[in-house]
Length: 373
Ligand code: COA
Image 1 (spheres, rainbow, N blue to C red):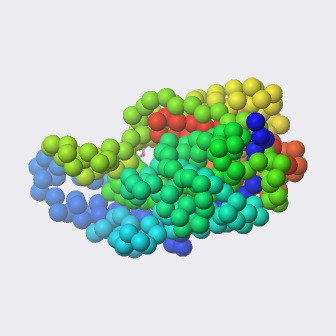
Image 2: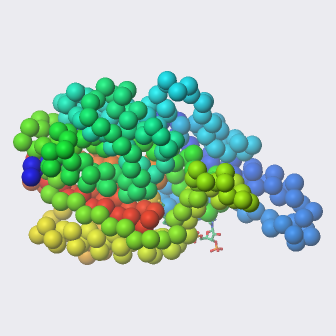
Image 3: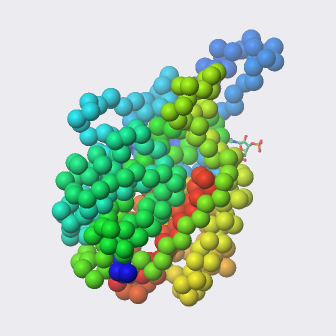
């Protein structure tokens, strides 16, 4: 078994950002129009009036201030309220692949590698633009890499599960080096007309390069000390979109094939699942939680991250110990913990231990324990 490291990371951030104020303005305009259009039915009690959203609530409940999106104009237009993207010809790179390529090339560059050095590409994320050919095979093609590629989906925990698959492939010798790419266009599955969740998601893409420790040369290499994954069935985060929607008779309503969650229940159930996983994993590796320099946690909710870190450490975490990017990016699903890693790893010193931890629908959770070389 070879020792394996993460030798480079990459990030693609869309050019356009939507603030809470802009999002709330679009939502509240939609609400005013809906209520005006349905005034009679609302007065008669057959339709329930919609309530407005607020910037204060969004920040207080989630810690989110803004989110990036692949199309701001569509998202903030009260007549549209979703990103609008140009359909592309089959010989053009798909939007997900275009985003993933930027992150992948940056990860290779940071690791001092080229596409010729890798022979496995894993696209690990929550939503694939199409079922096949795999996004990973298309990405491998445009990257000019050999070997193989495949897609995997473990919702928001996908990147951690992808790292485990990449580590297994490299240390068993089935790949020389593997890229884990997580392009997320979360605004595509977000119901911007739902007050409970219209503010939650944003778009981004990340990449991590996994290669044998003995030959890696990147400036910031992290030995993978261990990976531990866990799943436990729950319907509290669910997306019913799928290829059988056409066949379901009668058809589901439009808002039943988008993201939906019971936010309170998710919070209550996922916090203990993830903190127990982290404590058990660190314990199995003989690492005292308080000696961990950094937790790169999934970025869905600020209080949730603070509570998980507090349960693991037995005290309040500092912002350096559990950095936050969700204020700027919102929840970018599988990309979130990797964005935190990408932005906050260069200051760690040789020997410092950090934990990359992703969690989400399934439920699913993954812990990847790393040591700076
Ligand atoms: N603007 C203003 N008020 C709002 C609102 C909005 N956009 N959305 C909901 N509210 C109101 C509710 O109606 C409710 O009012 P009430 O107390 O009068 O009934 C109140 O605010 C609280 O709503 P609730 O949905 O219970 O808020 P919350 O504190 O649980 O926060 C989440 C909502 C979604 C931010 C939070 O539950 C969360 O992040 N959970 C974890 C989700 C998660 O991690 N998911 C992973 C996805 S991958």
